[in-house]
Length: 427
Image 1 (tube, one colour):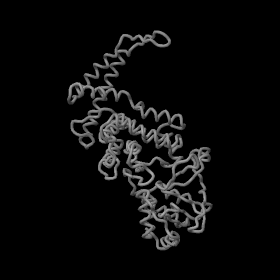
Image 2 (cartoon, rainbow, N blue to C red; image 1 turned 90 degrees about the vertical axis):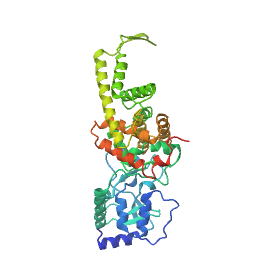
Image 3 (tube, rainbow, N blue to C red; image 1 turned 30 degrees about the vertical axis):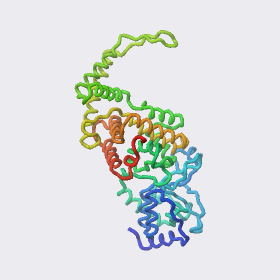
Image 4 (cartoon, rainbow, N blue to C red; image 1 turned 180 degrees about the vertical axis):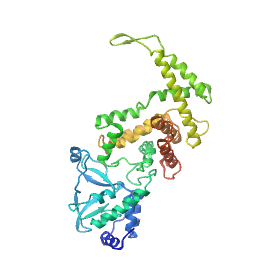
């Protein structure tokens, strides 16, 4: 709740009396809401919007690289004539410029700014300075406490799983947009802009996330993983063998493939691998290569049969939940790699493991290889979600599945979704 004195203090500080600039184009819904709240002088609503966003500020890349795990304690002051004072400038994501090598942007929440503000920091917080939705807040102790109240309320109400679109600064049509849309399931789950190829959640946080989830700490490792994802070499080849076998059977017999027939066919193919030996001619001469032992083949057969059972049960759930139409099945889980490849390009750019041009090229590839393998966004989505479930879910049908089911429903129903505004294949 606003206290009368605090509200008056903020209103007086934010209303500078200067002629406000006007939008040529509003970057996103966030800036539109900030602008509308500002025009109403509703600073409580303004702070509510801010409390649900990452707020970005400039930082020195060499300093961050030399101090891993730390963030600059002091905020770089900038002079703003609107308040005739020094300010700490922060920006919402859609207001950020294109990435450069240095400086970079780091992000913190409104609550983090409230907790960390010190007497040594500038006396004003400038939000999106120079834009039509700019606002200036004195960073007094009482106002920082008020920011914290808004942040606490946002933490209680904030939910993931929203479609967010850059109206300016991100492609919404064309092949780059299509490639970015291949990563949209994760973007929706994280409530990130689906068409952003920019700063992510900030340089330092993106680096930490890549190290935590992928073990990527160098440009070379990023390049390796990016290539493996876009060539479908990251996921288990057993998954592709198993699904590919069913697809071949369906083509050969022109109909549905019963699980029992699928298991029998898999066993026959795997038993043929019990070869006595093969002779290969290599640059080093004639090489004798032994096939797998009978014990190894039995183990492989048992594993593939269990996998067929898992896939069958997942697909049954997919049909019940509307992810798969009746009578359809997943032909390949390459989408799991391709979708992650689209996002890996964005992660790499935000962490400065690649250039804008390299990230865009990777996104384009993700779109191309996806349209070669799949026929529609729905086909792609079911394949991506099956791959994610096989990797993480262990047939629990828990968050790893539910999160993507929710994202799928958003992407197939929201009028602004790229899956509804972009054809899966170029006409």
